[in-house]
Length: 126
Image (cartoon, rainbow, N blue to C red; front, top):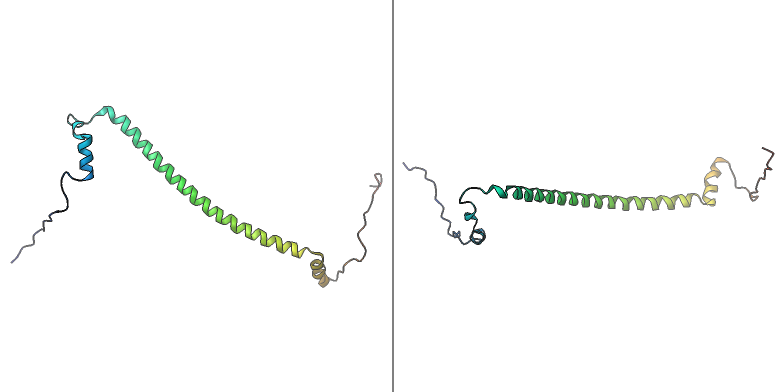
């Protein structure tokens, strides 16, 4: 009876010491900094840079969210502007004298043939 065996994969395309990070590590010589342990004097600077990175990332997210809100509000404003223009033209048409006369004819009112006149009240009358 045969046994199950793990297949061992050989990575032929991976070359040790030839990658981008390996070259970067060789140029920066990071191993020399950590020979005697972790350098504690750099810890505040590293933490400060990490906090700045987090602030930068959060600021970018906030800006993108704000841009999305502006775009949605801009589309809504355009829609409301179109509604306003439509309603304004409808109201202007409905307030024309001929339209008002046609609508009140059903109520039994008719248009006055006399022009309007001004009522003058003297100061002591009221």
